Image (cartoon, rainbow, N blue to C red; front, top):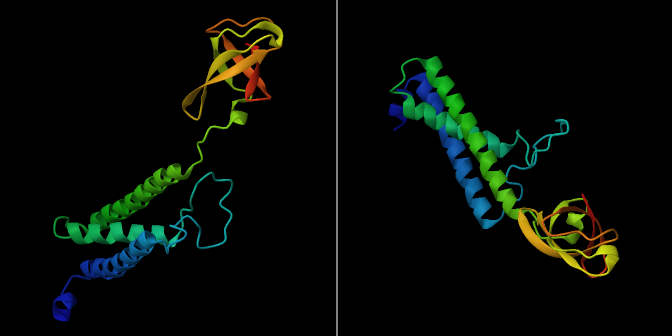
Length: 189
């Protein structure tokens, strides 16, 4: 087996020398992730560095991203070695696929992190938002009406009062503050 490896072209040999350790490390990372021993999942940077005020849930330069790049790069080089005769084109395609592997990892992590977001409804998230009057709101806090408001993509029907004149159904209001007992104070827009 070593004899056949030694007879490979230098470029193909290089792809194999990258593919084997990258694949083994990827398998180990995957196993550790599934048993819960991998705490960071590539979200933390492996170095100290100020990358500005990026609003990204993970760092570009991490060990996991390096492994993902090397995996895509090396296996693309091995797979297309016989079909693409120009070495520079093969390397360019392998680099592009390696970068795609990193990009797809970003998308997957982003989707997984969305599952961890706290999208529970909080009445305090309604302050300053616009709502539609569902049931007429009587004038000067003499009674309660209802408004329909969208918070975090879900509609909620909430009780509301106003300090001003009566607000009819289907008009838009702005939530000013929260009164006692989950009651909203609104004003007509």
